[in-house]
Length: 131
Image (cartoon, rainbow, N blue to C red; front, side, top):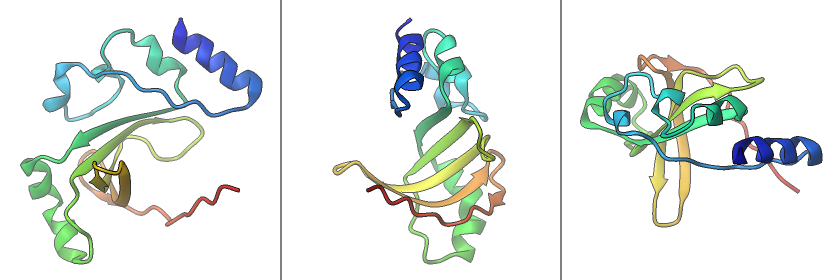
């Protein structure tokens, strides 16, 4: 009920609301980190316009992206991957966004994106400036 009310408020006032929820224990072994990993009511994912899951990078992940890192030596080794499983009105979903994250300052630097099968995809570099 809370997620429904937040969605109504966001639509009514034309604002962006960012919320988060917990994952269930299956996130460690899922090949497709999506809304099925959310703990509790699945209806929360239905209301979201964008669904993301932040995950640590495993040794298996590093082995699978080694060809990408080898071909791009300027990329630092990522320590976070963000699974984009829902992106309403956007072309990118079912992807990982590989990032370098400084957890001390909560700053995340995206580096590159792959499909869930670790195939590199091309995304235009974009900078958003907020006045």
